[in-house]
Image 1 (tube, rainbow, N blue to C red):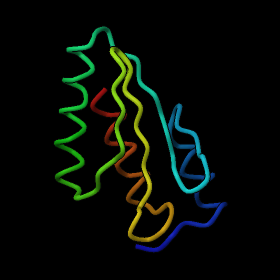
Image 2: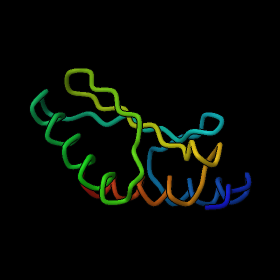
Image 3: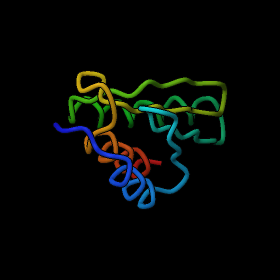
Length: 92
C-alpha cells in the first residue's frame, strides 16, 4: 500500500475524531469506565486488527487505552492506518 502524502493525511485525520499525528504515527487515547472495560475494549480492537492483518501499538493504563498506528512495512502512514483507526472508533 502506498504512503499517504501530508495533504492526504490531513484529509483523513479530519474524518476521525480525536486522532492526532506524531510524525509517521497517528495516536488516540481512550478513557473507559474501569480496568475490565479497558481490557474488553482492547480485545475488541484485537479482533478487528487481526482480521485486517494490521496491528496497532496498544498501551493500557488502568482505565485508559492508547493506540498508535503506522504501517511499519511501508515506513509511514497508509490508508490501512486510517481504516483501522475508524474500526477502533467503531468498537468504542
